[in-house]
Image (cartoon, rainbow, N blue to C red; front, side, top):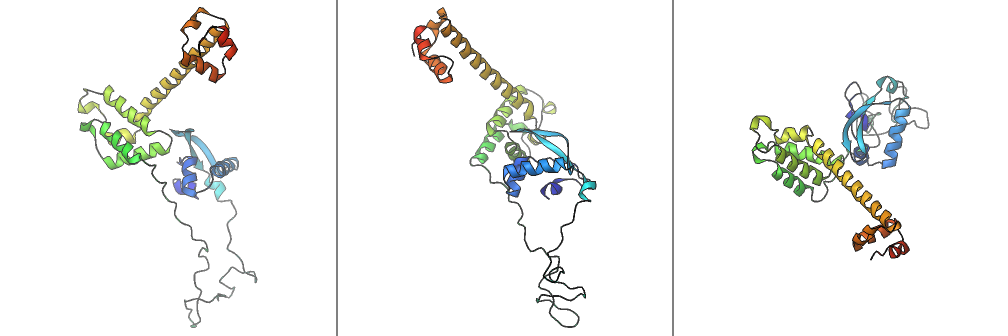
Length: 267
C-alpha cells in the first residue's frame, strides 16, 4: 500500500529507498527487503532502473504491474457466526445495535458495514537527526551569498539527500568545492542554490571526493605493505620506519614482533 501510494496512476515512478519504507511503515528492515523481493519475484513489482545514489548504492525505480494487481484475491469482510458479513443481513437489516436509524424507526448500525475496524495511523516523518539544522545553516552560509535563493526548498532537498545516504560533511564540502570552482563567474553562468540542490549538482563533487578518499586509503595500504616487505627482507630502508608505522604493521598483522626485532626496527 505504501508503494502504491508513491506510484503514478499507471503504476510507474516508484523510487523510495528501502530505508525510507522502513521508517514510514515502522516495519523491520529485513521485513521490508523480503517483502519487496517477494513482490518482484511474483511480478507485482518490476525494476525499471536506478534513480539516485544512497548509502547502499542506488535507489531502485519500480513499476507496479497493475494487470497482476487486478488479478489478486480481494480482502473480504469478516463474517459472523451466521455466515454473513458483520453488521448486515441478507434482507438488508442489521445485526448490531447502534445510534443510527432506518425507515421503520429501528436502531441502525453503529457504523457502516464496510467501515474498517482497525484505524491506520498515518506514517510519521522521521525525526531530524540532532544537529542537522546547524549543519544545513553551515551549508547554506557556505553557498555564495549572491546565488542563495528559496532557503526552505534548499532545506528540504538537503534533508532528503542526507536521508538517502549523503553526509552533511560531504554536502558542505561539495558546496565549498563548487563555490571555489565557479569563483569569478558571472551571474548568467552560475547556478542558484535552489536549482543546485534540486538538480543534485553536488553529485559530481561528492563522487570526486569519495574517489580521492579511496585512492588515499589505497596508497596508505600500499605504503604499509611496502614497509612490511622491507622488514621481512631486512632492507636498508628499515632504518626509516617510524615507531608509528611499526605499530600499524603490528596491528594489521603484516609483520610479527620477531620480524621487527630481526630487522632492527624500533617499536
